[in-house]
Length: 606
Image (cartoon, rainbow, N blue to C red):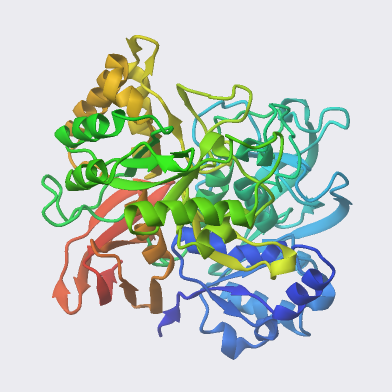
């Protein structure tokens, strides 16, 4: 008998409407973004269905939010226990009322006394097949961060996957000072053929707060400006650690206890792209930089990158009501296959520290449109300026923009953190911006692409080839979207920067299958298409997985399937034998199936 592998999350509109009416963010709404970034194509399931065996029979994986026990329908505990025992994967984000099913007992609670964007605990992952390699081996002494209320638990038939550490009252923003609580932060219970995983904290709030940060309503870092760096919630903890990505990979591995098909985060190598055409690529590398309103460097930088077969994205900045880049120069850059977008300038002529307005955004977007004849796609803010929470994203989208690249790798000071690789917002992967309670916590049709590596590979007059190798190895190991940011002036006029780029090209040339290379506009188009992909009718029957997948990205897409202890044994797409690749990652085997754009019916032997 076939068993469903559909991924779902329990969701009712009522609790969100009530929270928003009180002016509070409904953090669990972000579960949709989390699962979308995983490529799980998950669908909402009414809470009442959690007590209906017939409804649960159509579900393979179910996520529950931080619901109070009173929100669960009568009979949910029994129905969910039977469903898990039959092979379901249940994941709870501090859910109450189901402790027996999850194999825990609540013994206390740590309120988030300093506000919803404050660090309220830390965790260390234990060694387990579920946690294997989820946390990148960077700053190994740094604990992962919790930004939500926390339940104190005692395991009761479950296995600890992560240990909870409580903040030091005097230095709560320093994970090295946190103390062992003796309680688990994450647990796993095996029940029959299924699994029940439990987070003692709200994973949705934690990931939303880390990735989008807090509202920029003050100069929190004291550098004299309102910038994206003021949004960072990491406190005194390491900026080198991809905190949210560790939780992202862990959640994917939990879902991966069953062979649930997901849309891979990296598109396939484009047809006709040379070596590795149509193959599964190890990473997506992006390249961009700002012209700072300076003339003459843009074309030189574009020509340099084009000569090496690299994409490039140049943001043109207005000064005094005009751009340094001419229409003819823009045409030359675009003839190189490169992109030109807008570098919003809310530095010159503003009384810092201060915000900026919807009208300020509209005026510069209009200037770009009138000068170059189209709307920018992925723009950036001069000096990474920001104001409020989602407001700039909303305003830019109103003007036709689709993405931003201002949430960079590091905080301030220094004002210009060159030569560094970091994750000040916890992740290398793009994400949608989500709005505030006053705007119903809506998911904006707007993407933030974080900068990971800023003016890397050189320092002064010296090239640092080891840094370029490390960047490429990290990107490939975790199949990251990895954004390199080099200003045109340095590419055009600094030999050490040019050597760093050449070293990256040399290293890419040594790879069996090169990464996908893209400008930021193209990365936005990919991530937008991926977020709209669909997965239907996923089911496992007698060792054969079948499902329907659809994605409209022009270069196609890749489906990845966790297959456990053994590799997949064969694949068909639309009734014809299809190529696939196997890899052992995160403690198990995965099948990767490259597909052309459109809708496809897939079967995979397990």
